[in-house]
Structure formats: structure tokens, C-alpha cells
Length: 192
Image (cartoon, rainbow, N blue to C red; front, side):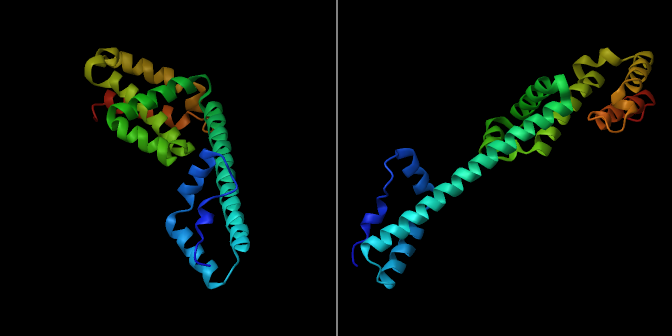
């Protein structure tokens, strides 16, 4: 069997599927199969049948992986929507602005293309980081007048300590609220 070029053709006539096949089955894998088929003296029909089986298995694997990825994204978004409640969209937009401001298009593309940006823990971290960055603007910089007086800081501490997020350890925003109070107390007592 000298010519196995027929295996570059599959029985699938969908260009997007053929592109997917070319992305997951590289030339090296094809050449290895071609050599193995020749070594085993497979007929053209046998080699084509095995090749089609390999291609179908690879396509099924990609389809299953895509389904699992979509399901994970759906579950992640639902979890975060439940954790952050009505503030979810605001926090998500703030996280995107933070990434864009400090990481630029390169980081945005990396998070999107690598799948890292779909990880619940990463998204939650970025949302909390953006939230903390927004809070810190009230403590330093151009908006420092918002909480400049000791009385205003004490009032903000009292307000935060009265909300369920501070009092209930299981509240999704508990740690974040405790950290806000901690930073305000440090500022109040000149520890920053």
C-alpha cells in the first residue's frame, strides 16, 4: 500500500468539522498512522475504516469537552450570581475594567482564550479585587475627601459592622466586609 492519501479525506463534508479535525489531528499523527497501516499491511478499506473511527472518536471527545466547558461556565455564573446577588453585574463590569486597565487587551485575550477567565475562583478573586480597588479610592487619592474625617470613618465602620455581611460568617461577602472594616480601622488609628 503505497498511497494512503485517501485518509486526508474523511466522509464528513462540513468545512468547520474538517477544520476541527485538522486542529486536533496533526500531520505527525497522520503520518504515524499511515506508517502503521502500511506496516500492518492494511487494505485501503481497513485503513479508511480505522481512520474514520479515530476521527469520529476525536470529534466526540471535542464535542464532550465543549459541552462540559459550557456546563461549567453556566454553573460558575449561577454560583457567582447567587453569591453576589444583585451586585453581580456591577462587580463583573468592575472586574473587566480592572483587567482592561492593568492588564490590557493581552490579558483580556489570555483569560478568554485559555479558559482561565472561566474559573469561578479567578472570577470571584477579580471581582473582589475590583471591589477593593474601588473602596481604596475612597481612602486615598482624588476621592479622599469622601472619608477624610475621623467621624466619617467611625460612622462607616459602624454602618459596616451593622450589616449581615459583617455579622454572619457564612455570608458570601463576609470576608470582604471584615477587610473593609479592618482597613478603615487601620486608617482611623494611623497605621497606614
